[in-house]
Length: 423
Image (cartoon, rainbow, N blue to C red; front, side):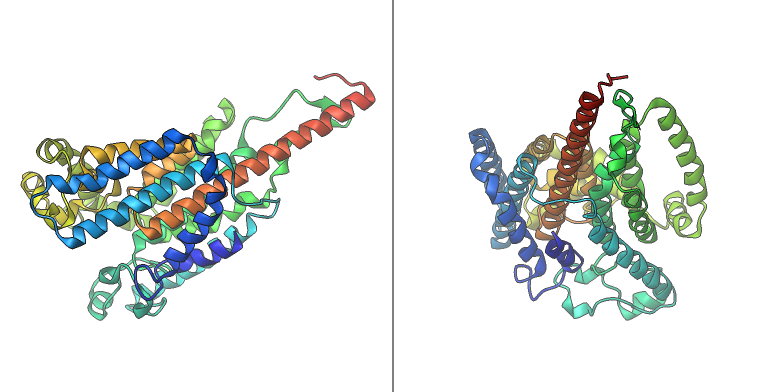
């Protein structure tokens, strides 16, 4: 796990798309997941193969298909199958050995990212680039700041990545790794395990430091000024943590969160984003990423039920996006809708099949929210981050469940020894 976490900040570094650390990380995670491949149901292999075949077969419906279209479709099909198999494998057999202090490497990485984001926030505000050498990147070359953009544009921190939205996506993924710890710490307490030494509350098998360790991750995410991060984080906190609290604790937490939210929205960093949202003339990212694709999708599916290849995608979307005053490039920034635009109805089956593998509401929410961030979800960098997140999440959860059982067994032993009945 330490090797994978150390690789995470450098996913966009390499010589080429395949000769890069993102490919190395996918390969390492595949090794972890292959231990359970043989235990996967036959239906998993069949449905994954059928959906993969449908993704490639969609090219047959297009009269104009280039070699690049075939290569891209094949690559994305491969990563779809890898994600589907790995997530199911991790659900059956969590890949990592977790202990009480396993959260610390994630926390250290979060602190490094927070410090880096703060330095970049200050340096970019002064028109200076601070980060890895730009010629090291193999992705997002068009989003790296140029001399002109540093001087004239208000740029956002991107960490060690080529794009701020991807940095925010990685930070959200790291937060999800903490969710099992947060949920265990704040969930409803046990009240039926009383002995003469007092009530054993197994929530406190989770170190209190783990609760604060995720704070730098949230701070770094706020500094990215990513709208997708601002929307995704509260959703995950509610689904993964607050929903499992008692009614009184949940009500109190929501009230406090509301007050904190008002203060945060009025902070200098976040107000920049809210002002962009309010002023649609200067920034159309909100409507272009969410609302316009939502309106375009039904009409597009009727005209292109099998989707459109990359070479013809702009041409296929233009008649529908132009009705809402948007260009195709403006609405191709949401992974969920991109999947539908590329694969048609097959894209909906892809999403449903990936979600069905998780069987966990927090991870399901996470996967759907991942698609809000810029870039295709069936790519090496996204696949690596998603697989690592799912693997650590399930491993953390298994450690908590094993620890809980051990504490319950210890409690029963004490009761049997001293003859004390349950409360």
